[in-house]
Amino acid sequence: MHLGTRLNYPTLAPQQQKRHVMTDSTLSIMQPDPAGLMDAAKLLQAGKLVAFPTETVYGLGADARDDTAVAGIYAAKGRPSFNPLIVHLADQEMGETLCAFNDDAQRLASAFWPGALTLVLPLKPDTGISRLVTAGLQTLAIRVPDHPVAQGLLTAFGGPVAAPSANPSGRVSPTTAAHVAAGLENKIDGLVDGGACGVGLESTIVSCVGAPTLLRAGGIPAEAIAACLNRPLATAADPATPMAPGQLASHYAPNGTIRLNAHTAEKGEVMLGFGPVDAPLNLSPSGDLTEAAARLFDCLHQLDAMAATRIAVSPIPNHGLGVAINDRLRRAAAPRD
Image 1 (tube, one colour):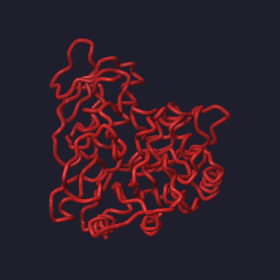
Image 2: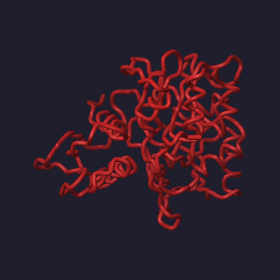
Image 3: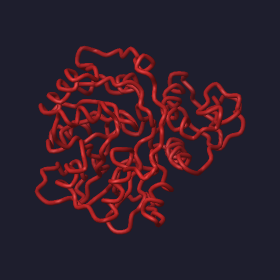
């Protein structure tokens, strides 16, 4: 039961979701039907990399127990090996075979799973999870996605799937199959085309090792999590060695530079608006944060397609999903190495 805290995210009708994906012969495109999901599961069982949709963003999956397959994720994304991965599971029962759940973790899992919440928990011994997944830590980040295609694939595979976002590391996260193919088509083996993702922001990450701590804002507002626990979440500064994905200072970046909290565009800038703003792209003309969250990464991809070199972004209210939107925008605007 979700205690009335789940959000209704926008979804597209099946006929609106499909987009033509241009690929070469090395990438197998699979439909989100039983036959396609079984083919995708077989690729995972063979140690291959398969991208698939979740309600948040598309993930790049590999068997979390296979060192070589997990190393392939890091290689395909160009991801730093000290940045741990989230493991996706079909259900909480599988999570309890891997991790130790305290009372806080049990309460949050009951309230928000399946859904856009990742829990960081103590890793049990002898689980077989690759140390590349945890980046050598004694904790594991896990979640149960709330998406029928992800659920179908995880059930068909029957094991833990390590799955960061299916994009080159540090770049804009993918919310359609076309985004995945554009960034990784020559580097992965399979792609399940499940249409557009409904949430459009990565999962919220909460550590339940000690006091519940917000590690990354995301698709479940921190206020809803605090209400479930009947106390506020602690907050963690970005560590030099991340405890969870999405904690690097520069992340989610389009090709152009970003100026935040802009009320108008300067010469040479392309405006990304919010609310009643005259702009080529607008996250939500009505000022709806749920719509803005669902559209954020797609708009950043569109700005890349427009070859925007300088981007001005309207102010976004910093409450509810606005916290996660602002977090992604700050990281996208951060100086890059």
